[in-house]
Amino acid sequence: MNSNPNFIEIKTETTKLLDAEITKENAKISLNKIHLKLQETTAITGSDFSIENLVAIPTSKGKALGLNYAALCLLDYKRTTLFLQAIYTAIKEIQDKKPKKKIKIFYAGCGPYAPFFTLICTLFKPSEIEFSLLDINVASIKSTKKIISAFNLLPYISTIYTADATTIKVPKSVCYDILISETLDAVLYRECYVPILMNLLPQFKKDVILIPENVLLTSSLINTDEPDKEEELLDVIFDVRNSILNNTISDNSNPLKVAISKKTEHYNTLVIDTNVHIYKDYWLKRYDSTLTTPYAYHLEKPFTKQKAVFTYHLAPEIEMKLTFE
Image (cartoon, rainbow, N blue to C red):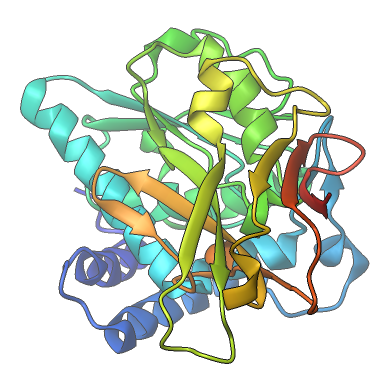
């Protein structure tokens, strides 16, 4: 048993976060306590203005968040709580099927706090789970190693990689049971979730549990002048998991064209939503998180365009582009 006081303090708050009925206020209290302990341990506050901590790190495709922004992801309260609950659920499900199995987890893009390693480790014994951690930022890995030392988490570690998750060839990749890569932003802008999965998923076994399981971009029409008016869902404009499995993503993916001309007279805004399917029944929907902040395009009247055209790009920036024709 780990009697380390830092470990015990984090375990106390993490256990509270597993309560499916936890209130927003109580989740905030627990995560603020965890954040305070992690920033004390690493000296990364998420709010200083040093260039080293602010600058994003370029990868072969897209960019990894700078230290500050990566650290502050912990304080996206509902996001962190649901991801934690989902990962815990996935581990318990594997344990129910294979009680004696040591579950191996690959965490790509762990950031300076490696929260889903640090918190999850307090809930299991080293004989039950084992992590491999990866981050492209040398400073993030240095920070994570401080946490490992301060919380006595070394028994949970298999390997630590300082590498680009969009290009790495993972040794013995088929041994992993869970792949975590929470490396995304609203509308999949700039961050590396898609290129990371394009690289890693083909290397891992087919039944590996991926968290988040999928991301769906959807388009809708709304009327901001009539908040009570029911919005109209247009289409799923990008299904990440299906696109990767079907190998349909390129540097300039084929555009999806959606007819809107007959519908715009009743609406004044086109919205793109980022729907994050974390695992099973765990979802992040509109405004649940900074990840799911919608992109809104105001349709000036008279709006004469016939179609909305959505094109996902991997270069020069990772982004979903919206045009009209």
